Length: 230
Image (tube, rainbow, N blue to C red):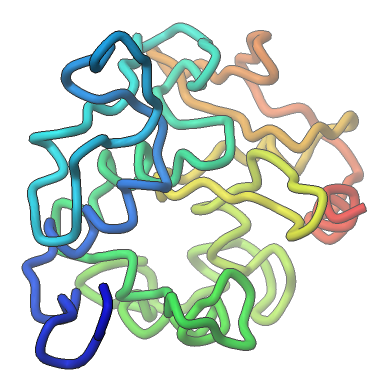
């Protein structure tokens, strides 16, 4: 735009939640244009989409088959690669209730991890305090997390946004599906930075294998976080 200004720039804050989130998902997702190839060429971005239009008219997220590990997804259809925040978020309860990416992130940058508007624990607890109707449905955080307040294990992201990949420059990439992971993620003897995911009948999938019960171990959540950040 030659002369950007308040009168000709679309402000996501003035859009509905779907249109607001479409702006982010347009880049932070894996999929393909509805018509592909286009003029004999294949694209991996939503050709023709621009802010204010409906992303679904231009872009289709990658398909997932429940129960199968694929190039993009774990067996529970949550992503295991970077640049798939939109694929996860579009499946989440947060998305269905009108929460947007900009509810938590400031695209213009902040001093917080991942351009969060507030530090992670503060921004989660704004909506999810003890006994909140949004959950957790417990009198205290310690009762909900089974870890001491202020410990690494009590952090919301430790269970609800587990690390799924590591980028060389910016560190951990976390899941945006907000699905609680199994406690075997932290309490097992051999750690790998991929999360444990639920499968039908109460089973869980660990790194492509099967595990019926959590594996007892001495590894703490703090050690897990340190291992991932190396």
